[in-house]
Length: 109
Image: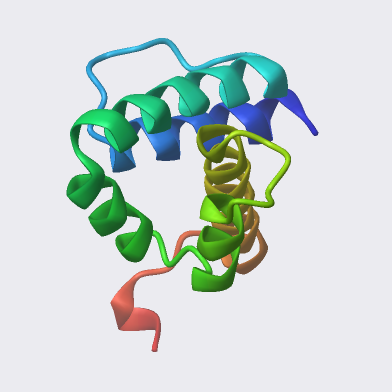
C-alpha cells in the first residue's frame, strides 16, 4: 500500500473517530495498531458509540458479526480494525477515481 494511501486512510479514521490531534501513521502496521487500540478502548468503554461509528462508516454487518464470533481466531479489536481500515481505503480510492482532472464550477453544467 502506498504511503499516501496509508496517510489518507489514517486521516479518515482520525476524523471518523474524532481522535484528538494525532500524527497520521506512516505504515500500515502502525495504522492497524492505532485503530486496534481505539477499537479495544471503545469495546470496553463505549460499545454503543463504536457501533454508531461502524454504522456511519457503512461497515459490512457480516464482517462485524465475524469479528465478534466466538470462533474467530483473531482478537475482536484487531478484526474490526482491519475491517475499518479496508472500508476507509475503499473510500479514499473511490474519491481518487472519481475526482475530476480539473476543478469544475457548477456553471459548467
